[in-house]
Length: 151
Image (cartoon, rainbow, N blue to C red):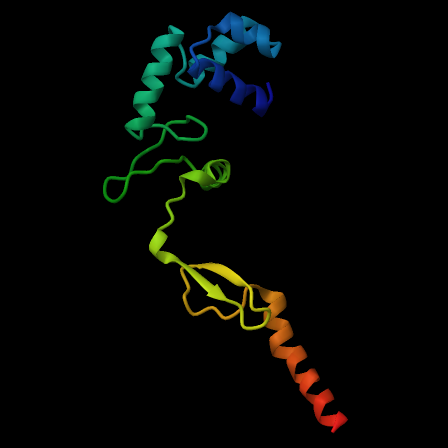
């Protein structure tokens, strides 16, 4: 069984599908799907499993990405993911979940090109990007030298 098949089994099981239906959709036998589900706490009636998994995710007992159980620390913030890899993959797949403050967005004007740009978290930026910074910093000196040599 591949990792993609395992993810498909998890997703289909959360939607309330049975072992046989999952096996036919993925191309595995019912017994392989059933054994996988038993090993990963997905056994039982599919509707009950999907409700229980939602409760477990809301209660932060399983990983938000892969569904594996999480050991919560005794003190501190409860964990949402079982490992760093799952955390990164989940945030990569859900960029809309990032909470950005509207107060931290600043509309500024680039000193080099004069175009307005939005800076998040830094109101002291002078340039819209690296190209404008390099042009202003290094090419401006060459332009000044050329002007002096023309005189």
